[in-house]
Length: 385
Image 1: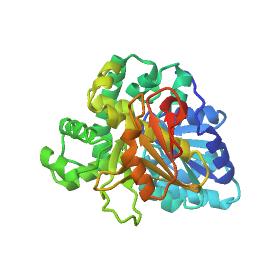
Image 2: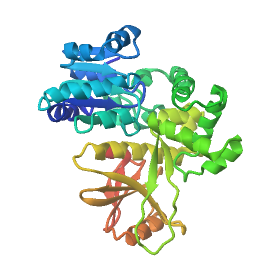
Image 3: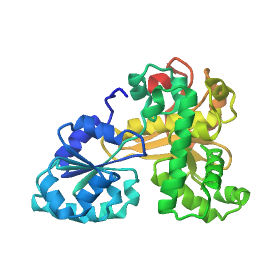
Image 4: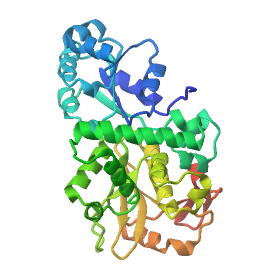
């Protein structure tokens, strides 16, 4: 596979100057190892899922770190929990020295307590995801619609759709047979898990209702929610919380659920061609998720804290995507159409007024950017990304 310069390269360089340890996390097969080796070609590399490397490190962790702890990459570091306390002691001997160790892992850092507790103040986290559209396009020139269909996992990106489907099948199989059983200890068979995954995919970009899925599937809603939490842990889905403000309206209280990679979503929904995507009843929901995921990545590259929400009243007024950063609130309405009719934006405009926002952005599938009126800016998705 050709090497593509990732958008997080600058962030890695900055964090190596700020922290003694940098942790790079993301879903399996998102390019963590390739990225780390490309950015740090002179560094030693050890993989904890490789028996020989695991044995070398685990037999005497302190000795290993003392010998190889400078400019060292350790992959799938979460496999060896005792590593983190040893790393803490090692870096504290020369606390002022930065950029010493890079850890790679497939589990969300917020849910890996042993990393957070052992290395607090000593570590910077970077999240790497499947390719964004610009990164994918740098690997192979492709239209936005093809990228939307295929998703951004690096390895199968240059393959034909049939081979990509086989790759996705094996990816899902690994998740249900390995990751789920490792952490969830579920009694659900792999076949039933795939059925559950498919049911969850049908809830993409909609208000989450665990009880409804649990009832249809024949398990408790607690089981369904635990499964979704595990999918979030492995970066397969993300939750978008509702935005609350005292606006005198009854608001939707449930969160929305989004698959983070559109290719995985389409595999589970059995959408296997651009033509099928164009006519699918899930087209609008899928496009909404694509835009939100790509916008989140753009905002997270900027310095400062940023939070993401949606807004919906029980009367039906809605904002698909709200971003709260140091500059305030930014509102986005997402449309799959190639034309924009101001008559379709009445609920969006009412929502803007309820939140006291003077401007909003409509993202659509058309080809040109333009100013619809004083309040609404329209952005073509291809130009925005």
